[in-house]
Length: 346
Image 1 (cartoon, rainbow, N blue to C red):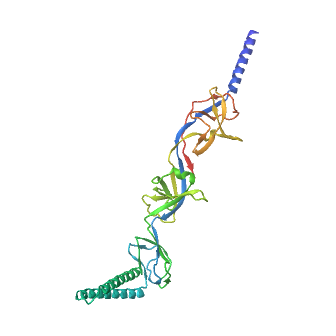
Image 2: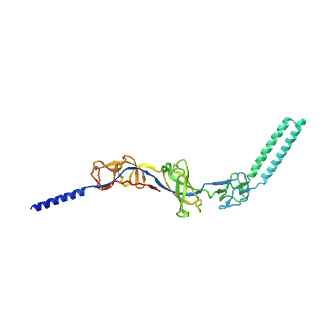
Image 3: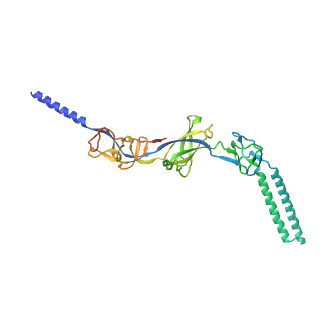
């Protein structure tokens, strides 16, 4: 009878122990910490020529020479376009003759003055006529020079818009020329990232046409202002050095990191939402959970920045959410750990 009672008592104690073990709510936690985080950005764009020029005529005339076609390479000072100069050449010859006559008249009057055969007024008029003649000659020489258009730098012709024999109106675009050794990449970034990068930052560039190799690039220009329609800013990236085989128009992809900033972060999966907003469960000094509402910032990989509503070193519940409610007593299953995060943005 006694043994039966002891057995019954042991059974009751064991059942009670199992019941207490069953009702213990285990959670894992992590401390909210300030960490240095940065964002990895990805963007794409087309390769463009940094150095390019459109060739215009400054005279209305007939084209007599236009030797180059798109794709042709030219050297600096090569003749790109030659216009008919017959009329301008004649006008220049006339201006030269007028200048020579004015010089002769001025010299003759200067020699006559000591003999009192020329007045000061006549000499002054001759000097003025000489200045006018010289200016006219200079003007005609400038016009004559405009009949020959030369390459301002060594490069490659990309456009040819007329043919020899065409009469071109004043200020018509005749050719386009680029420097194929001065390529750059232009990309767009969301406005929120524009203050997190700087000129001189290094980036990684992949050009689809050249395979999967990564090439070094550097931010060389950040355009002022944001496009009001897309809310994106524009940056230019120089290739250093320029990859062999790179050409204008090729698609290129860029990976770059923003500058590191210190943020109070928590694991992204520890944040929950209800009708009042975002919240996390924190552990108080009595080992009870409390629902703590927060204001979220940007996400950095598996971490989310907290703008307000949370103190540093608060113990955040990261696992054990099933059945968890405000004010419930919990048992922490393991020591708190801290991880880092890097954001990857498309």
